Length: 374
Image 1 (cartoon, rainbow, N blue to C red):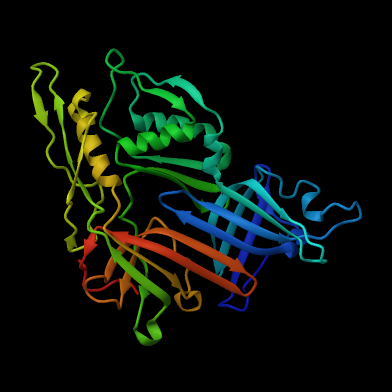
Image 2 (image 1 turned 60 degrees about the vertical axis):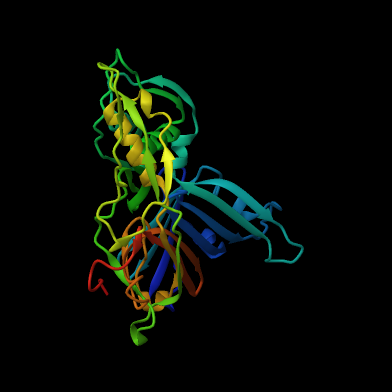
């Protein structure tokens, strides 16, 4: 399937299958009307595909016969700017929306789905994981989903539970446990496609060490590649923490020192100071490592103070903007120029059109670098 040949030679591709996604038939390709893919660092990734419907000789719509787009079909959506395709999402269909029409050719089928992490969220379990730190448990759980091309990438944690003191309990789905474990360590979890059929399952600190993407440019003549861009600075977003834990031998109450968010490296010259304080109400019964992790997790999970949103002119940008990576901004003044973390990107694709809207964020104003990658 190919769209967008009129714009910089961009091609869109779709693959489908029960477990192994394969190129779709010409009939499915011809019925395709539009594609929307959202990559979101907070809410996860999802997609929506709209097909035009025609009835066959059996009076059934062709797209609904033969199991072409049945729920729980695996879908890979990719775009190629040039020769090499970039996978936007490897996902699973979870929902159908049928909109029949009295007018021929105007009936629509919209299928919606999520990335393959939805397969980790189908069965609740009651399990114990004795003597295993969180990152080991996460790797063990992810190994059960190798058929979806998952390559675990879990960052080690320092807290190692000892069986006679504490046994980690799982009373949730695998996805629920993995996300809860990420939250209490100040980590994030997401599944991101590497290539067709292969996905990285990342569990660790927010990754700000990636090679920055080409800059989003405003008000710089021919170099301008952003249709619109706006910023907001919320001084109430950051939080500080206050709490203590009980030293088990002497029964002494020890305060937890202020700990910075687990967002390294910093992206702004003037981070917004935390004006709000959150009490760590459960830290008293934790050991020092757990209490420190709770403090770091609380400050890390608070939103960034500075956020930006806008839309890329794909004809000028000429690349696929990816979420969960860094991107430079230039042309908006010294306070808001510099590098940002890409929180989300929504790709909207239809014949002859491809737009990318985005949100970006960082912890404050002012740039740390004199220039960004163009």
